[in-house]
Image (cartoon, rainbow, N blue to C red; front, top):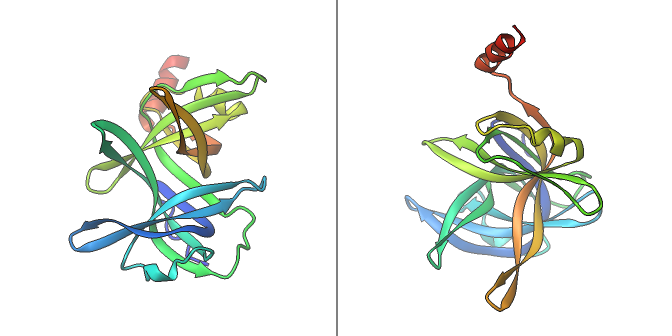
Length: 220
C-alpha cells in the first residue's frame, strides 16, 4: 500500500485496472508526462473510467499494460484545453505516487478530499422522481499561484445543504471521482462525451474567524 502522506487540500486515493495504455501528454523543463486511463469499480458494481497523468520519473510507462492493477495517490487537477477556439475544462488525476498491485483488495478504492471555495452559485434541482441534486464548481488552490476548478455533484441532504452556500464559501468535502457519459448535440449530429466530476458523500462549511464574528453579530 502507498503511504497516506499529509492530508492536503486536494488528495485523491484510487486503485483500478489499466484500460488504456500510456501516451505522451506534454513536457515541462525536460520532464515528460504521460496519460493513461484506469477503471475503478464502484460499490454498486458499476465502474468509473478515469484519466491519470504521471511523470516519466515515477514509473516505467511500459509496465502500465492493459489489465495491470495500479494504486495511485495524487490530486485532481484541471486545465483549459483550447480547441476549435473554444475553452474546454479538462480534469485529470495527477499522480504523486503510483505502484503496481496484484489485485484490488479495497472495496472502496476511489476516495477524494477537497478543501476549496464555491466559485459559482450552486445549481439546485430535482429529478422527475423527486431526488434532490446540486451542482457546484469548487476552486482549490495549489502552489505557484495556480488553482484547480473542480465540478462537484451532491445528492439528497448534501444537495439541500449545498444549495444554501454562497460564492466564496470555504468548504471541505469528501467523495469519489466519477465519470459520466452524456450526449451533446452539435448541429445535426449528436456526440457522446464523458464528463468527470466529484460525487460528494460528505460536506462541511469551514467557519473562519470572520464568519464566526458575523454569526455573533447577527445573533445580537
